[in-house]
Image (cartoon, rainbow, N blue to C red):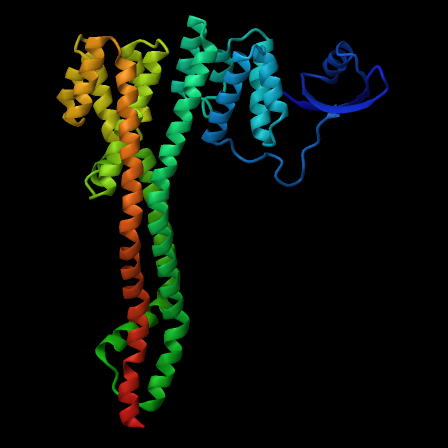
Amino acid sequence: MPVFVWEGTDKRGTVMKGEQPAKNANLVRAELRRQGITPKVVKIKPKPLFGGAGKRITPLEIAVFSRQLATMMKSGVPIVGSLEIIGSGHKNAKFKELVNSVRSDLEGGSSLYEAMSKHPVQFDELYRNLVRAGESAGVLETVLDTVATYKENLEALKGKIKKAMFYPIAVLAVALIVSAILLIFVVPQFKSVFTGFGADLPAFTLMIIALSEFMISWWFVMLLGLFGAGVAFVMAKKRSLAFSHFLDRTVLKVPVIGQILHNSAIARFARTLGVTFKAGVPLVEALDTVAGATGSTVYEKAVNRIRDDVAVGYQVNMAMKQVNLFPHMVVQMTAIGEEAGALDTMLFKVAEFYEQEVNNAVDALSSLLEPMIMVVLGVLIGGLVIGMYLPIFKLGAVV
């Protein structure tokens, strides 16, 4: 739906400006007159030359949107009015367009679930199912508040994991780039000096010079090979379920990092299942939605098996025990929750515990990685420097 910019005057003659999504300019003029504004100019909003599409919509923005919408609805603001306020106050053009589209569908008679279903990228299956359950039960604002909390906790958890992974990868990447620069530009200068003196060079120095010559001759092939390997890896991970499952299974076995990912998957499973169950989604349907929210194909396969077992009459805790992937504490707390009729409460407690475990593990990993990174940097950069200065002792004997 196009967006129109308008300019007009109110009953006191004050000049007013704004934007309004509508099917045509006449509808905008009619709406303005209804509000007591005399329209002077109504035209389609021009697209800027640069950045016209706006930045992409992030999951955190969806979480904030959910919180704002829940807060306004709890305060008694109608949902259409709430969406208008949220959309008009946002700077991201794509997000504003998304909110206006949802609002227009609601004004056309669609339910919020139907309106959000037109935007499956921003509102995933879990989100839409929760909204549908909230609308059916008449507790939409409560469900939206629950969804907002879920999204915020999930993004915080993902942020912690990304932080743990990004720091060492970034430092190692910088170290490799610096090493490549030394090999391509600095080592050849030392080589010319050593050749002029005619001294025999140590084996370590000769090895570095040979590596430098190889880099200078084949750097473009190596760069192309790295790029090709990266693209092939990403494509294989996206298109091959077997490769993706193998990769996730392998990463889960890596010391320290594997345990963090295990705890993260359990936390996501528990919180997502707790949220869906609390919203009134049937258990089998909830498990079907939860499978894709764990962030790991290993756990996704396990949750699908749990869903199949629950569908034929197993209790959740018994089905969890069969997959032999969840810790004993998680199975026992799930069993207690089922017996007490408070499964969602117990699942939230499990999620809180494992989220805290992830936080503690990430902090510990950061402290552990700092000295290890220093050692790696010392070996890479220090090794090159030492290799270049070793011949100085022999050069002294020649001179």
